[in-house]
Length: 165
Image (cartoon, rainbow, N blue to C red):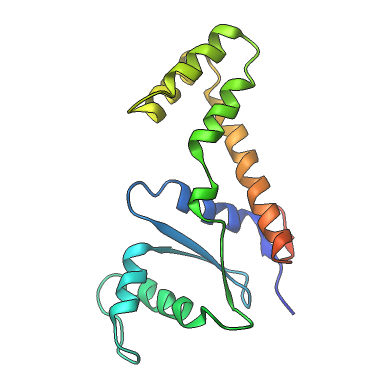
C-alpha cells in the first residue's frame, strides 16, 4: 500500500526546483516512504560517474547515494521514485504575467507588465509589485499555482496526499 504523502512536502520539492538559479535541481517522490527527495544536478552527475558498488565520498555522499538509487530505478516497470513536475512546468514568467493581468487598476497592471520586459525582469517585477503594495498577493497567487501543480501531479500518478503539516 502506498503511503499518503504530505502535500506540503511536495510543495517544498517544487519550491526547491523553482528557485534553483542556474543549477538544475530535481525532486523525486519515494512511493514507499512518502518522502520527497531534493537532489541537485551535481549529485545526479556524481552518481552517474561512480562505479556500481563504489561508495560515494565527500560532503554530498548522502545525496549521491539517493541519486544513485533514483538512476537505478529508471526504466523499471514499477518505479519507486517518481519525478515531480519539471521546473520548466513552473514557468515563473508566466505566473508573473497572469498575476499582472489580474490587476484591476490599469496603472498597476501596466507597470507590472512593463517590468517583465528584458533583462532583470524578476527583480523589476518584484520591485514594482512592492511599490504598488501587491507583493504579498503576488506570492499568495504563486503559492496557489504551485499547489495546483502539486495536486494535479498527485492525481495523474494516483498518489494519495494529505493537506497540512
